[in-house]
Image 1: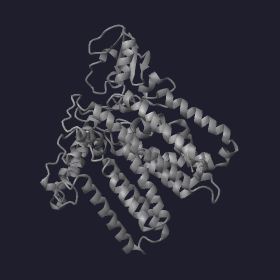
Image 2: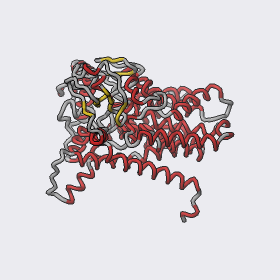
Image 3: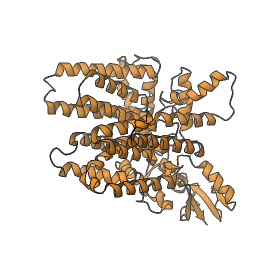
Length: 515
């Protein structure tokens, strides 16, 4: 039966296979990152039916989806009930990474499927190819964190919403409700999906003239949506103490403390206690802001440093410097296309919807997030971007030069991807031509998320004359973390390096100096 399949089918299978192979190679070659232990710890507790937020700062942003990553350890424990590990959970984190890798195959599936339904098979191949060779999605899609899951549920929820708007049947609506509900078990920033789709729905109903005309039916749908979302949140947190009022909590943030003293404080909320507590803790950490030792290092972008508050343009800037140029150019082309297109050309409403979703997160996260430590917080913009990129294959410009453009896209994407592989987290595009100078534009998990320890150790073994910088000034060749060199902790421990200029870099996340 397989011989009846066409070339397109085999290309799709080949691209998904490349995605998996790249992930399998990269996972053991990147050291455990800073946040993975927190997510692993909470995921393990979820499988043990303990969903409380025990550690205020470590558990604040952890979510039940991490329980999926703890399944490999659970199977090992079932097979060997006496199993006890002495590596502090590091092997379990490595095994849990494979779960993220496999689950996020679905991200590629939704990108491919949506692009195909919009723009056709060739466009879908382009979209899928860009996903497979996306440094950001693949870099974080091979970690035991929740950022890649946020990208998955953003595109799945947007896809089902589009399907529902296109054909308003019960099945599409239910799929949208379920996807939106599951998204709330992944990351607290997924609350923005509710806001975004609420805004879009308002304009859709206005355009269709059914906001008031069908207010009864619209209200029923809204109630069903609320029930499904709330039910799934409670399921994810194992129905842990729902229906408590805010006045029963020991709140940390100013916003939730203010709500406690209002009429809302005594109202029983249909949400599990750890969900509310986590939301309060993440709000509290955002109020403390970057630079607080319990939260993060200072915010940093294009040579500027801030503590307490963020830069409204932060995610726009890192998006520009960390997105492959192919996708950036197509995005700008899509925006221009919406203004110059001919009638009946393209899918303007859907394209505007995708562009709106991308820039909504880039701008809203920039204006509301006081802790700006990497593009990973905005990873959800990439799946809609790659769906949107499919439109390029339908343009006359592309079709007249298809062979040339296909080769250029493939060569560029593969070359820039494998130049950084397996350390894709540190990726920056050609707008930063000299990679040792990437620190002048960005820092933190954009470059160093803790993933480069193995590479650094290997470099030091092969270069015994190089040492790792400490707080005492020394001559010779040394390596130092980007954040330490930039003094983002404001501790001035490495002030003796401030007047030195790097001579190179190690694995794109350590600076190398020859003093």
